[in-house]
Image (tube, rainbow, N blue to C red; front, top):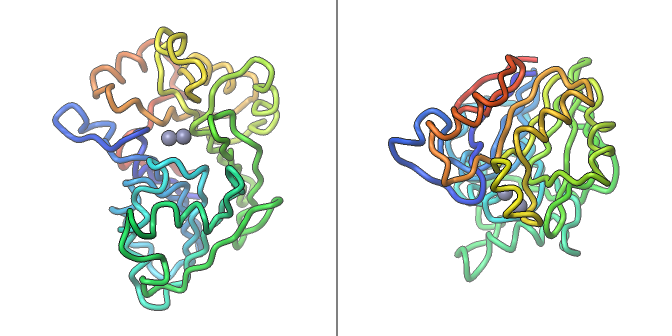
Length: 260
Ligand SMILES: [Zn+2]
Ligand SMILES: [Zn+2]
């Protein structure tokens, strides 16, 4: 399994000389296997996807907040004739996967719906574990305003857990720790510093220290912090990283490739 960071910023895309190392595109992570290309979220990072050749294309949506679907209208494969794209999401706020997509890709926010593109696009409401080729997909609920989904993808004995837009909660963290048990890689929302977390409880995001606790308790072999605060530039993120002092823990960097 090869994982590429296409976008790790939260909330809104940013650019400029202080966003070169960690990047400023919003949430999108590409999972490549021999025959599958699976995108975790469709933030603005999905627009600059590498060429995935003839592999099957799937998109898994954690939740329909704008930063996670923003790139979908410009996803290159959406315009490729007859390219099959399978789009998966749990119901969110009573909305089906299709309705979540339509909340952005339809009038008045966009001139067309997905039918206006050339691909063979199919929406799936996730209601239980499922398989994408040889990849087994499981999930739990996130802790986030409006709800969200934490996915776990397992292929060939390796697993990655994607816990973005997740607020550390004493009462519910045990569920995530169990879910992430012994995974190879944990993506964890670490948008805030400790002080910011105290000031923004209920906003649905966590800290690096809380991520370290989940990594250590779950036995996850490595962690990448994601959903970088758009107000935190490269130097600020490196300072947050310095506090952690672990060779297994880093903030996800633009175009970083992780092989499991
Ligand atoms: Zn978000
Ligand atoms: Zn969100």
